[in-house]
Image 1 (cartoon, rainbow, N blue to C red):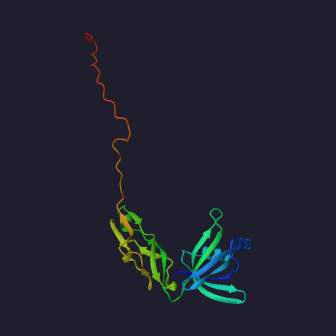
Image 2 (cartoon, helix red, strand yellow):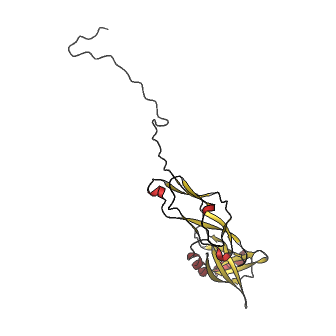
Length: 223
């Protein structure tokens, strides 16, 4: 299942560019949490804590138990990280979006697909493994969301493939992606034939046949 972590955030009352600059000067990261049936809440997040959560994540699907502090009031919200914006050059986090979810309502998410093993067709047949579909869209409860989908490719021979409908998904997880799409395939290695004549090369000059050289001691032919 997806990694779950705890994170304490502060409700942010001030909005606008100046407010965001002020938040960043304090070493905090501006953010927002939104979801169906609730008003968006502006937040400020501890940058070190968020970086720690992201550094320990093995996939993009991180389920968070957010503690939202508003003065003396606290409330808990189950959320997933929807988007993290980074500075294009310095790579520090500029903004983070959280998507509030319910533990009892299904969500859809993209889960990475990981190929495991070495196919027979590659090991003994000299074929090539083609990883065609890298991510799978699934539907499940937040608590059932997997970090990744592993597919065993060790039994694949030449010209064999595995489709979405053949994947072994965890309990409670259903694929939304078209079941007929190919996930992985083993194809024969393509051998490129060497061109017989280089493209653009000048045509060979015709062979010039000169007069027959007279044999040694013979008189030269008359003109």
